[in-house]
Structures are given as C-alpha cells and as structure tokens.
Image (cartoon, rainbow, N blue to C red; front, top):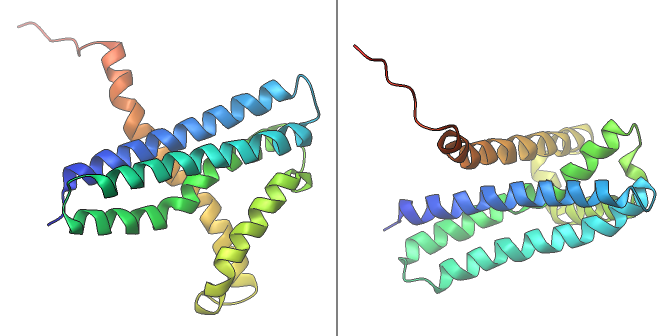
Length: 176
C-alpha cells in the first residue's frame, strides 16, 4: 500500500529544498559579487549549494526509509527521489545561470558549472543510446534544464502560495 499523504509531505519538502537551494545560492552569489568576480563567486558558492541540497534530499530519503511507512511507499519514494535528484540539484545551478544571464556573462567560464555539467554528462552518457545521439541528446539536455526550472518553480509556487494567502488575510465577505 502507498501512503499518498507521506508522498505529498515529501514532495512539499522537495519544493522547500528547491526554493531554499535557489534562493540561498542566488543570495550568496550576489553577496560574493561585493568581494570577487562573478565566476569566482559562483565557483565558491555552487559546490556548497549542491552539497547542501544533496544532503537535504538524502536526509528526507533516509527519514522516509527509517519511518514506519509501508514498503510500497518507500519504493515509490526511492523512485521519485531518483527521478527528481537532477532537477533538485539544478536549483542552485539555475540561480547561478540566471545571475550570469542578467550580468551578461557566460556561465561556461565557471569551473563549478563546468564540473556540474561534466558530472551530469557522466550520469546521462550511459543512457545516450536509448535517447538518441548528437543533436537529440543536446536537445534533451536543454529540455532538462527548462523542465527542471519549471518543476522547481511550480513546486515553489505550490508550497509558497498558501503561506502568501494566509499573510494576505481572509477573503472579504460580501454582505447582503
């Protein structure tokens, strides 16, 4: 049996980790600009951001595996964690990419960004024959970046919107 409530709770935590990874990396990079060049700041922040995001996701998975949930729930959670690991790790990287875009700089000069791309390529290279070669694989990588950003944004909106509604107060009631 699969506990949808537990999966929903973990997906909510996933959204919170995505938002935190994006925002913390973005703020740290922007703060680093006061002391160093953009690429130096990115090279200092990205490894720490990736490590923190990976540790947070790992802690959630370990907590779920140690819980009293059914085996089916744990298996579904492991599959979701595997499928969502790269989009989650993309959160701090997308903050660096966005800042580089608005600064009109090429993010490819960052050693940390290049190492991330190489690491992802090493993971994805074995599945390349199944996806297709050459241009199709490049298109898949580009699609991954956009989908990861969209998934993170939508999960963030789903997580943050109820808090915003509570801050705004109750809806006005029309008197009759």
